[in-house]
Length: 140
Ligand code: FES
View 1 (cartoon, rainbow, N blue to C red):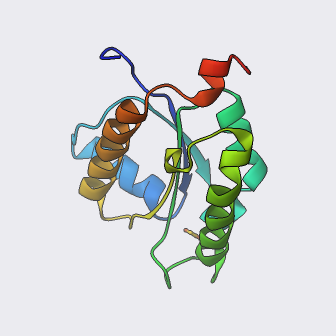
View 2: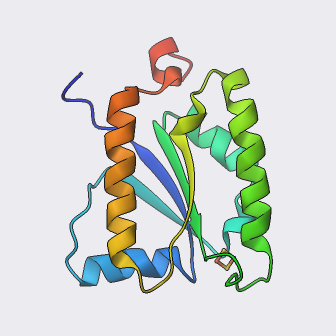
């Protein structure tokens, strides 16, 4: 399926990754437009329900990204996010989703290049995986 363009829902921490996305834009770093960014104050506030809802709503991939370990503005939010994503990856198959569709990264505010590379890599990986299982089963 060569013309498949994955839809990605991205939850970006306001203080780090969202700023990196902003920097990528102002630095004119190109990255695929497949990503729909949702700004959250901390990766630790990304409730697992948000991720499941994104998948059930037709997302082909979900990216959660926050501050590097030790840099969370709310002390330990990113550690909470890491635990939640680990558990979500374990239960996603029970919803019929390939766990590789969910990715957690840490991207600092100054790292627009890493942001662009991360989105590009995820798009390539999702193209290999193909459309979301929800779309294929017409759950949505
Ligand atoms: S404030 Fe960025 S991950 Fe918590």
